[in-house]
Amino acid sequence: MPSVPGGHPTFNDCKSSAQDDDTLDSFYFRFSPSSFDEVASAVKSKYPALVCKDSVVTNARGGAFTQTECSLSDQQSSLLIQRYAGEITTSSLSLNSVRLLNEFQEKSNARKKHL
Image 1 (cartoon, one colour):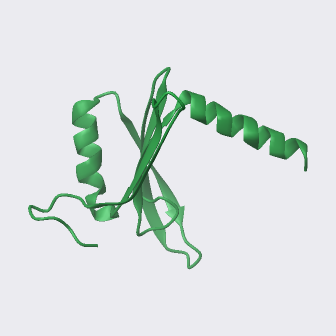
Image 2 (cartoon, one colour):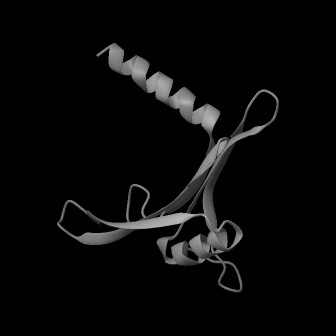
């Protein structure tokens, strides 16, 4: 992954969405796992209540990797930083409103009822 001068993380695949009143509903960034510690540290310095937990994940070939997930939630939103977001070559940072998370849960529950 290319990086910018100074060695700062390069964010890829940035996405965001807003509610009808232009209130931010979510944003999502993907970046290289080699930048995970720097990103998590920067967020933690701004939001000391951010909690990080490690777990072990494996791939189909039996390789084991330390997954780190950092999260912070309040009454309005939920922040999640993942060292591995679906694949070992991608980290992610996402922020979602509680309103959007509730909407996703309602849709998921509705789909389950139709199975």
